[in-house]
Length: 483
Image 1 (cartoon, rainbow, N blue to C red):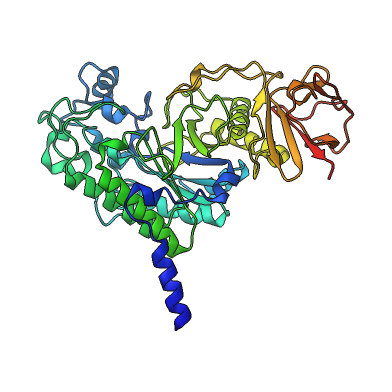
Image 2: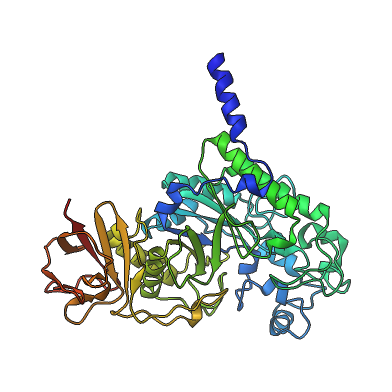
């Protein structure tokens, strides 16, 4: 009885309070720092039109927008066919959570999960708080629940992403000429707001959401936590329109529930939507130009054009994704890659093939990624990274002169983002630079068992390449130090 009392007292002391000073004491789990790579997917009724962007549901109501013109020509006037009418067309009849999870695992993902709710207000789980969910409409299946089970069976961490704060003024609920302005559909389209309320992130919103909207935002998160115990909850930007007290209460709820579950969890945020140190900073379609002393995340889509399935995608190459991952990891970051399933529940062949290529690369080179930590410097080379929200398209491809470092145990990994023409010259590891203060025992290329010849001068470390090229993308050299 005394021991039980002590344990209860210790748990009570650990409880997080809804104050930033308390929430900032929550540690970043080691599993997250080790994992490095995850996969999620934008999938919902907005996948049905498959036209241009996942913002279709917003743009279709904007006068003069090309998507509105397309919608009216394809589906009819908005008072006859609104966004709600896509829901029965979101059938998901080919959805196989087990097959998806196996693919994610083969791709090398260590954490994965769905967009639980996008800006459209449609919940992808079996919710008791709304009828506008995937269990009661559309697929008539608990998508989040099925994915949670399948992902855990594949021994990955389970994540959910949450974008509901964007729902506030996403649809023109002030416009009685369209279905979004009919109170009958408020459960989907959100509360009535004045015309002109919608703004982009990091711009003042007036009026801000009321307590009822804030509370529903929080209640749905509590339901997701109680039902699925996610290892990570990821938030889209613009969360700063939610009252600060509600954001702090969410974090306290999540961190305290995790203590009850005996589970180490991660929350992410963008921009300044949470206080620094209370959760993990996430960038969107962007990366850091330099190494950071804190772990961070970036989310990007496999499609240059959109996050959801569209008819004319422009997918990134596996090479581009590998180079991006290597660069991010060298700077203390991790990558969350989005993929776009079709409305009937298939993963496009071009997406699947890229994921499998990525998995093949990680099977050989994952030792230089998983469980590593950044080295003294992130790397060297001519590639210059432009920072900032949605900046990835500005960054040039890497070359064989771009080199990145990671470290683990008694090893330094030198990953070159292209096959060198002759030998590999690493100028940062020259004696004169002063970064490398350990003696080298051996060097080998991952995927090749032979010991490579090398020479270290004041100017550089020079590594003789194997006779034959190995692999198609970045190439990781393992340096083992003398003990």
